[in-house]
Image (cartoon, rainbow, N blue to C red; front, side):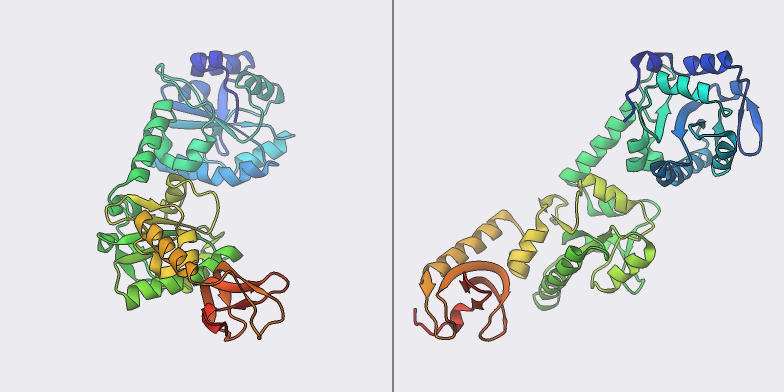
Length: 387
């Protein structure tokens, strides 16, 4: 993050204008026109330090264009000014062609002065200039990546307000507020059907963050499908999973959703990114479990499903404690070790979240008699020794 100079923050737009004047810059330019530098007065100004050779710049610029166009359409008085660190004027002009905003004319000395003033140590950097005495973000890149147009006008007060809203949703809110917004009150099934978010009210919800490209996510999806089918189809429990895709593109998203029996947030909807931010998702697969009251039950849904499957429902601490107590009591009646004629080595009692019995070839879970020497597992019921 750019280390913003406190003096520069206080001076804000006035200091920026002074430097332009000292370099003889009377006009700012876009890809198609020039405007007097005084035309930016009275607007919220953001300096965008970028270059065509910079990969992070190329990744961030489309987000910034979307924000800029949205705010301009809504009538906000915003101007972004591109400050180039490209190597030559030809490259600078080609870069400017991709941008809808203004730029300072290509001038490496001007770039160095502005970069020094605002302590720019990396690009991209988006520096809001102080106006009306308000404190602004040092570098608004992360704020824009997290909140998009909602980050405007990039003040610290707005940042704190947005983070407080996230915290409130994390603590608990209505499911409609979490998963829907004024432009979308539905989620989608794998066959394209729209399902009203209001139909989820009163259910336990699993927010499933996964992706088709991630092998652990594909493996967990299989486990989650098994638990979901048992809970919803067989036991008729009020439980639903919502897929929050972290796929790389829409085609991958379709591949993911086509393998799942539950609905998803539409891929193009920014709510996907909002939920990742709100629940601080650092890796996938992740399953966040939310109760009928809108409050988080657990952020460890993946472990619960992997260990206990459908029997973990409704995923509360008392339920998990009860399962573990039952398993401990069950384990107490088994011997610690057995010598079974079906296997040459001694087998010891162990616990495994899932395994295949080498005698009956059926799936096992929890207690097993396993071999320390080789890969061999035996259901307790398949042991010939009586206990």
